[in-house]
Each structure stands twice: as structure tokens, then as C-alpha cells.
Image (tube, rainbow, N blue to C red; front, side):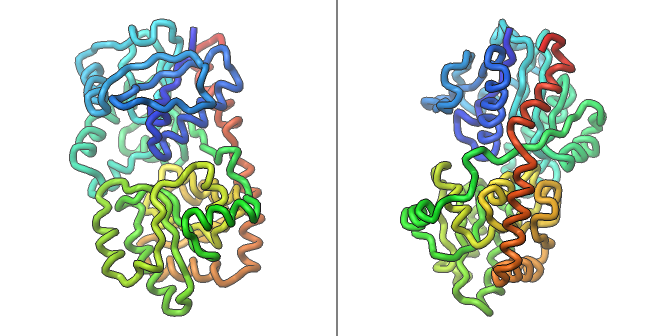
Length: 376
């Protein structure tokens, strides 16, 4: 009998969800390699199984992303169970917002955020419709729920009436390879991506919730007193991103902002390490993993004072109101100019990041499993 972990997001490299699925599956497999198995939807393209998970027993389906989501939803609505897909399963863990309809198998659902519920204007219409229809159903049908932050737990209780005792908060962590890079590694990524010697860094997909338009406003304010400031934006285009690019091209900041697009995961620690500071201007985050990754690399963090971000960064970050560009500029400018403050933040950030680990997350996840499966 096996515990199945859905790693579809990791197989298809879907940003933060993929990193969560891969990191947790690796940590769980280290603790209980004889019990862990993988489930994933191969999709219509050739899947790329993370090498660390290669060799674990697995079961898969082959379906397009949207048809598979619809099939799962209809299974719940019509009472059609998918138990035959996992004949040897004793538990199934949905690591993204897609819970298989299972009748005899207990299920755990990880909920990362309810951003679609809180900021509907920042989502595509079809995706918004689907999530609003399915997430209350999945939360109700799951045997247990893991929330990645207290902020997400609070949202589940507020918007869906999920009982507090059904939800366990288990924090994410930076992967072990996120650590201060050597000067040689930093120099190599500077050359590879055309990065300046000093820069503000922002990591994540480009989408409205990330509040990058206000970050451009803050950058214009900062440029008035220091024209050498540069912003490096690492991340792929998400959705509804055209307004950001339109503002960027009309702002006069085109040569001040460096867009790298998606970068290799192995290059990220050196990109973090080479930055003067990381800024996270997001209006809302279910967890905010780039904060921990930056702090683990010794990079000072300046971020929004909303949602889960203070929960993650604690007293190691400087905060601002993300709806106030002037406040954002003031906080960034203070850290940019003060090397002594950066040294203190660097020290505090390393200590803060060390409080989170995937081994700890895996142990806490196993404790949730044990409430559903007696012989773990």
C-alpha cells in the first residue's frame, strides 16, 4: 500500500506550485521511501519528471490540462469515483487545487491561497469561474486540509466556513541549494543575464496581483535621487500582464528595468546573492517563497506588509504598504542606501530562513497523514 503525492505541477514546471510539490515529495520520500508513490497527469506534451523523484513508483493519466480539470470536477458532481486509478493507495495528497474524487481512499488537500476569491479582477474569467465553482467542493470533500500559512487558514475559515480543526498550517521552505553564492558564481550569472553590479531584484510571475505597476511608480521616485538604481525582474509572463508592459514602455524606465524571463533554477541562488536587496510588492501571497529563498542567500528583503508575508519574514524584513508607491520607494531607498542596515538584515534573514525546512514540513505532513492512516 502506498501514499500517493500528486506532482503534476512539478512535472509541468508550474512555478511555485511545482516547487512545492517537488520539494515536499522529495522530503517525504527521504523519510519513508518504501511508502511514497507519485501520481501525475502527463498532459499532451512529454512530461519532465524531476530527477530526484525518478525511480519512485508512479501512476499517471494522459489528458489535456483543461479536460482533466473538468473530468475531476464532474467526478465530484456526479459521484463518480476515480479509485481505480490508484488501486494500491492508502492515501492521496493533492498538492495543488485539484482533488481527485475518491471514495475509499482518504485525501489531503493543500490549499496555497484563495487569491481568486479575494482579487477576482486579477484572474482570467474562465479560471475564476472554475475555481469559484470547485474549491468549496474540494475543501468539503477532502479528509484533511493543509494550509501553507496562517493567512490562508484564516481565509478558508472566513470564506468557506472550513472548521479550524480540519486545517493544519505547514510552512514551506527554501530548497537546500538556496545559500550564499561565491563571488565567482555571482560574476557568472551577471555575465549570463546581463545584470548590473548593483540591482534591486524581484522574483515571480508577471501578473496584476504582483503589483508591479506600483513598483514602477516607486522606481521613478527613487530615480530622482539616484539614477544608478536598476531593477531586475526574474519571472515568466503569467496572465493579464499587458498593462505592466504598456506602463513600462511608456514610463521612461525601459533601460532601468532588466527583464530576464524564466531563469534556470540552478542560477537563482547566485542571482539572489548578487542583488543589493529583494523587493516583493505583491498585494497578496499565500506564502511568499522568494522571501525565504532570498534570505537563505543572504539578501535583504523589503516587502509588503500584507497577507502571509510578515508571517514568513518576521522581523528580518523591512515592510511597506503595497498600495502606496511613496511608502514603497521610501522603504526600498532606506535599505538601498544603508550598508550597515543591509548587514543587519542579511544576518537576521539567514537566521530566519534557517527556521524553515522541508524536512520539518515533511514530518508535519506525515503527522497529518497519521490522523487518517493508522499504521504510518
